[in-house]
Amino acid sequence: MKRILLLLTLSFAVLSCGKKNSMSGEAITCLKPAPDKPQKISGMLKNVRFVPLETTENSLIGRTIGKIKKINSRYYVASDRKELLEFDSNGSYIKTIGRVGQGPGEFVELEDYDVFDNGNTVILDYKKLILYDKEGKYLQSIPLKIVGYNIKIVADDRILVYETGFEEYAVHEINLSGEILQRALKTAKATRIGRPVKFFMYGTDKIIISTGVSNDFVLYDLKDKKFVDIRLLCDDDILTSEKEEKIRQVQKNLEGITEKMVSTLAGCQSHFFFACGTSPSKSLMQVLNISSGNVDYAMTGNDIDDVTFTSPFFLANSWACETDAGFLTYIYPDRIWSGLEKNTELKDSPNYKKLKEIFGNMSEEEVSDLNPMLIEFAF
Image 1 (tube, rainbow, N blue to C red):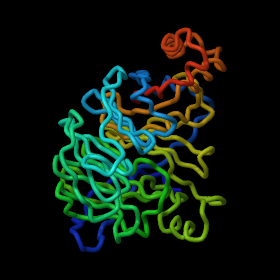
Image 2 (cartoon, rainbow, N blue to C red):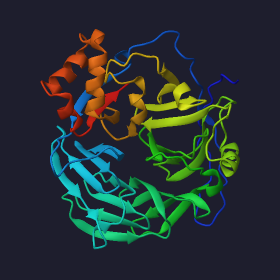
Image 3 (tube, one colour):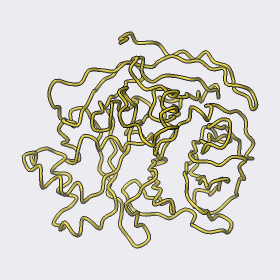
Image 4 (cartoon, rainbow, N blue to C red):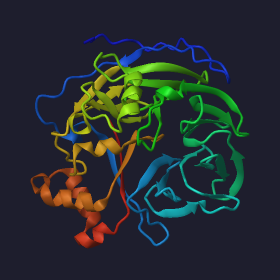
């Protein structure tokens, strides 16, 4: 197994529409060994902030969240593929953007969304993009030539669209007229996985695009507006996209696979977070320091969660989000409430006291009716 850190090189060809993929890439980092004994998660995190989302008749989120994002001190939550809710920095409900329907500004299903720097919002609805201004007012619809699954804004006039598998390529860069500017990632390699997010920030000027659970990715450079193939890990025993695709052609799942698989991913300006293992329960969570190229932390499910008191794997729900805190995740309050009851030996920890103060004298039944709680943190 290789243990030499390979430098990421960005020598690649521009992909223009209709041209074949001629990219080649290097590995970013190598795995760090698992720790010998359990660690406290709070010792790895800083700037932890708990944000209870206001629970009102108009802001009910339900138990299915497609994506969360923070921009301009506002939180955006996609709920049950039917609503996009906006909350302020304290978690107070502001408004709902768009609605299900067939009319102007309405969508059949909320596949994905993103937010521009100016506060305008774009919602993906299968074969069209719907634009709203920062007040939530409908602006225009943009027909797409492809069936979209995920989107990522990369400039004021450019959006990446992850296509669902009917075209030759899976990733398309388009402008606000719906014109395809360039493409990447052969569909044969874009094996499907139930991740609600396909695009992950890597530092300030790069986006990593996931395929399935293999070690093969596509990187988009925001400065040069170009794509390059990469491998996240230089280790040899990580599943390749070619093998993953062959396996999925003959069976529905990846049971019995001996190679490690990449599961959880999230990124921000300073760190990239991922988990790799032979199964979710046997994954080793890693935190890559982007500036140094080293893995700062390695975590397992045996570590002590003294942040949310649920499980160290609460980190697995972290989404790529542009926020000063670095990462953003969510947990339903009833899970936290139950965790506090089970971990009374940690009652003197600062986070335990913060959460107890948030819940006050609420009963378990009252807590179970609350909207999710957001947790912001950095490494």
